[in-house]
Image (cartoon, rainbow, N blue to C red; front, side, top):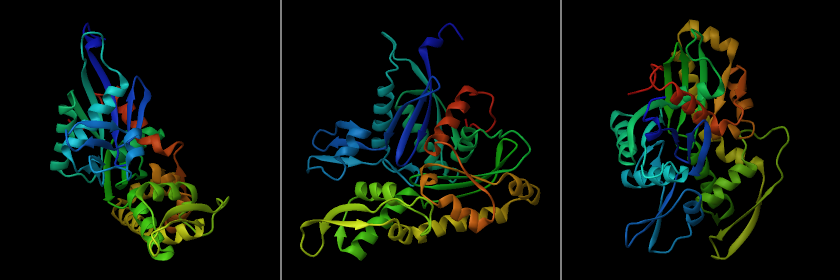
Length: 340
């Protein structure tokens, strides 16, 4: 601890398409949806995170809600900066008279381009970061699950988030081969919206689709402990009147089938690229599943049937990446896989 260490705050950010988590002092201090609400007339930020999410899909012409990240990368630079700034304020890192300088470790998708990486770095610097390092999501997920990534053993990680599904083979502190597909939680929501429109003639919003996915979402039509049918409320396309219908997990499993099949194809492609010695390790260790997508009922079983390998779901898969980013933050200068 240096003399001026109180002037520096170290934070780890899992900047996700759907949710942003911030770790400070080894604790998750912020866990909010990645969304901001902006006043169109003044350009000022009205709300960030949960408060903005409550406004999403319900705004009048003077307010707009923006999700700054699409497919795991920054789509709206200014909104992203406002969001990061607003979420850092939630921690309350001010120290008396001084606003401390921030050291950050930020999580990024493994399939990100240099331009997209630069956008993340710039947003963090504009939000007050003096030093920024980055870590790829599958690597952070592996560390968060508790895997010793420095070992000469192959481990396969699948991280299904909101915007991207990251599949990677990790050994010796690096990513040996990886595949990043832009099919994830948001696509599942879009599939549900589309299905409701085509099959039941009912219009629902993004938030309602997310709710359906959580309540009755499934990857297979035959699962243990099936959830009860769920009441969906939306607008009837024929009459324009609000109505209620009941949906079962069978229907949702059917409508998510195509998107999950794309993720399965990416998993098989990654296994094909894997060096044989690491394939032998993966046969023994199995596949680790992290990210919010890991909570989808029956997904682990479906992947296991497809690959004929054991699939382990991380405990609290939603926070595995954030936990790993927090551990990487403690080893800010030691880990070779932190991108300067």
